[in-house]
Length: 185
Image (cartoon, rainbow, N blue to C red; front, side, top):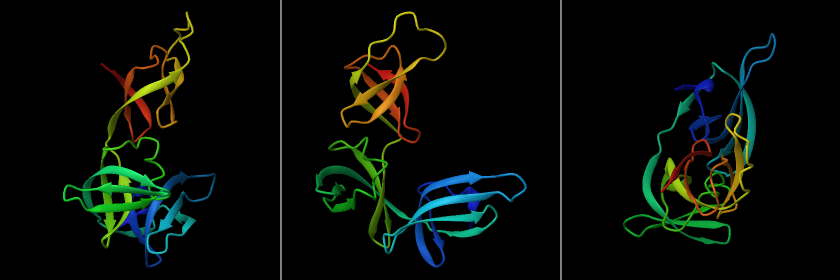
């Protein structure tokens, strides 16, 4: 059993008798009222999205999911195909992997989570290396503190990077926080 305040995005629990995957969790404490958790979640069985507000001390049954190492193969319309070492293919919809799309490249290793044999979500590696395809040149003389500028990756995703990063350089990104980690040589 897990308390509502311990739940994070990606956790799978039983709410109202149905398996639910948490997509967004937000802690909220205002004034005299009791602290609450606001959730955006998706019902695994029906695929319907929903939102809810729960007390922080409310308990939910935790579900342990089966995971499997896979590599991304290709996209077929709104479906994305992943393959394991035994050449089994798993299809996930665009909605199932929304947070991973910005990093997805062919042959990228990932981890797929299954509920009762059905793939429900994809987890990318914690740190990945991507090339900067466009960024503005650094402003000369701007050295006050931590100066950041937007950099565009091949997938179209923009990430803030330090002023010294230039076009064509490879950078390491933390996929959990979507933040720049370091330059890669």
